Image 1 (cartoon, helix red, strand yellow):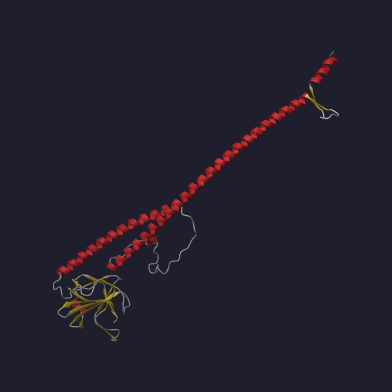
Image 2 (cartoon, rainbow, N blue to C red):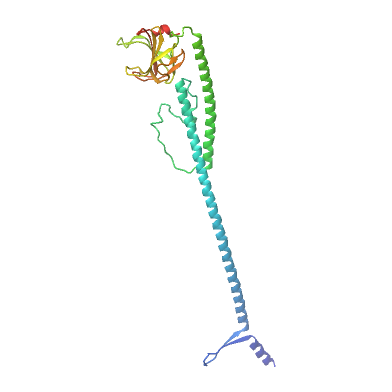
Length: 320
């Protein structure tokens, strides 16, 4: 009885697979133990689960990567837009800086032409360097090429802001100086008697060459030379009518002649710029030209003559 039970148990734990050919022939039989078949089914199920999991992970990774690539592309586009905006802002900041430089140059020209005090600034901070070097002919530039950053633009705008404050203060001082000078010139014109008689200095400065013989007697100087900075105002020394205003080929350069009547005439030579025209009536103390070095000249000055009936006389008697 036990032998039968043993055979029955063995048969129960085995599975038989038969292969029958379609047209007859030997039948092939494969016997598989139950445990092996069980492990096979379990392995197949496990493999299927792993396949499903791997497939799901691959699909998820693909989705995540696509979203990440889209986000990176969006960020790249945003960064490109920001870089373009920063570049435009940098260009505007540079344009403002150039405008400030032009404003400074304009103020320098006004001060030079009006004879006002030159600007008092720290050259080490404004980058002027050696003032004797002409920036129009010495304009070398160099350095590495780098893309502007937010900090660069911020620093440039800060410099523009500082420059604006300096310009505002300097121009205010210039306005006050010119206003005071206008008052002084007006007072001189009103207080001096005899408006048609030369009676004031034609310009501020020092006498660099007096009336009379000079250069060891090799030349006779028919007037006096008063030297000062280029652009110093030249004033009419008495009321009169402008007879000549412009270039003179006789060595005077830009010249103004004023007829004061009664045979009195004054001459102002070597001006850099003439501020009146022939036929114009002028008053004592009025600006008629600006000191220069045109014609036969070695430096900025005004050559001043007083002529009586066409004959040059010593202007010193008419300087008060």
